[in-house]
Image 1 (cartoon, rainbow, N blue to C red):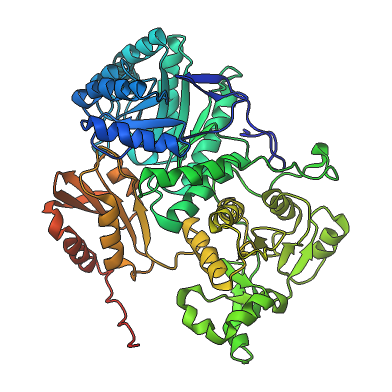
Image 2 (cartoon, rainbow, N blue to C red):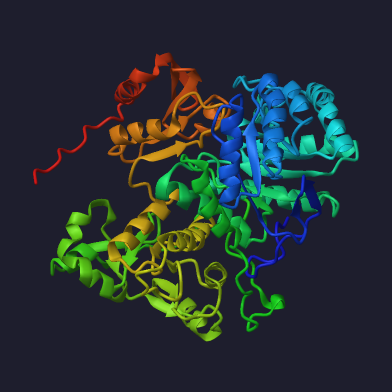
Length: 603
């Protein structure tokens, strides 16, 4: 099973073209950037203005939620208002739960997004064993509910997105396949087969999750399964990490998931889902859309010589290495001997720093708190090699003791390909130090977003492949900022949890409270709870499922009311919004995960 021709050199996946209004997706077209408005769909003027604002900053496709038939019917007025203002951007109706709303929306918009997990299906977290006959009967029921939309879209030239979310797999899928990437893929393929039965092919797929590892595995598995189905299953792919959050964390998490797949040649449209005003998503998405166009691996390694990769692209497992000792950075700063950092084995990935940058912060290293470097590269004994150098690799593999190994600076190979090649050829006993770039930056004026995305894509992708025992961020000139970025990449990749982890959805017309202000309030109260994962969801659509690996959840249940969850189980209902953050803190206390924040030192 294979999702791309090579994991060492870029080759964009060939797809058919899907037409959404005047925008062509897939084929030779560029990666399209899209987003979603956040206001109430019944507010026509606000919907028009938010759409125009998105288009003004480069958004090519705009999605609008249509939770009811009434909302779907109002899309007529929104689209008419946009066209009257000279805006021809394709509009996508976002549908959950109600096939009737999809049928109404399809009359007015260029594209409809349906979620197989809750379109004509159910999610009550019920445990039931389905016989093959019962399963077939359920599929027939779905066929009856979905076919009218397929026929209408075919007749009227509408596009569809079959968009599976990790958080909203149906009970039927969950009971047969589990809460897995395989379940996500099978859910989507069931609906695709129905579309194909009607000779309808103007659709794209998506496989979204708030966990970059799950998201990457699901997309890879989907593309591999499509290839197995046959050459005419070459449908375009929409990429996104759902509920990525806000600020640096949201951008890093999105870059890891989206960037990894784009580097594999997978992806034809993207949406960066931030808990911020939607216009802030577009610069990030536009920058990521250019990922993957890096030069192919040096001709010194012909395609016929590519070694098998060291990891399974469809199932995460960290590369097994031996544990080694290196001098601790803090002890070096204090002129002490004997204090060590441990790298490899079962240790969490460590954060490295170059000596020159360490000299700038050595006097205040303890004040860096959670962002203290673990070791200094020049004092670690790290061995730098060109992964194409067979003699150097052979010498390392013949060594009696494990060594920390990295790719040397200046190598003219894309970062991800270089470290995949190193991991494939190097004996697994040797831990690997990842770098974000082989050309360290000395440009203090370089936009930080560029550095953040490059570092997140390169290091985060490799961590999700299971490669990497330590990391070094070289693309950022400022030492403190480079360390913060390194730790945040580890957190977003799930490789080293050093602070509270948040899963926060972007706002939309379904949201039942102000997500940005609520997220800020929750963070202000809980940011000190290291290792606790909190999900903040504006509505129930993806809430329970996306919170499957969260410790606690804060979910909009009704206007002005909040439901609180432990894992995916609702335990407190209809709490007034004004009380909900305090009640969340009480819930965390009840489950023994609350600690009081450290007192703020007097200035």
